[in-house]
Length: 266
Image (cartoon, rainbow, N blue to C red; front, side):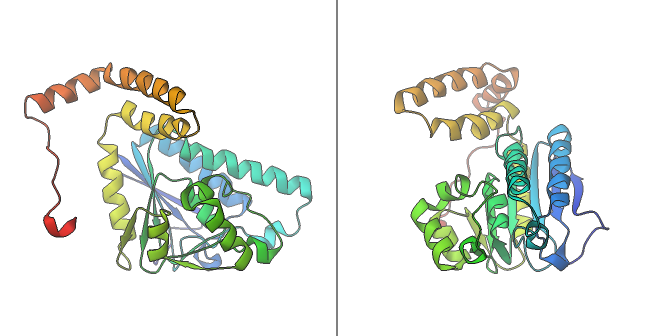
């Protein structure tokens, strides 16, 4: 993650069934500008078309330090609203698309960087990662979906604490809060993220789609409505030819079995 790949704000590589996107503004701590957002949108669309899972990481010492404030400070209120809504649309393409996204986090995961990470489905942080939402100190408010996505990960009260006080959270704390699912040693986040994405890419496509799109919506429903949607998605996924073949492979002992954790890993 030390080098960059050309002048494009986002690098793109297809590794087998996994698309790999790199935030490529290391000199700006990978701050997100309007150009970066459009590059992310283009890369996400490409990944949806040719990959079965995707990874996003940052070049240099940081994942992403957030909004490009130099660009933002000159915007009118209406331009800022339009910009925020564009972030929502692009990040929503990742969160509610057709392929799983894994983020590899190191260094600063701050402001808009945390909002971007929150739109991915699995987050891997190495020991150098730190998390913050300094919008209150900058005189602004989150605009990339943080009040919904990030607040649901860590809880609104914890998010308010970060925004009100400028508190910086370590990778260990972020894991305890549920902001990240995996914590790895320094420099190992990308390798772990790639391994997880490869595993997800091997799933049935319809099952992945149900996890990405039905599961979060069920959380917003009443219990009865959620159970009804669960039954519908369960029947739709199991009725596909791919599901039938996978079930037969399991019954005929052709499929890989679950790996039971060793006692020391539990």
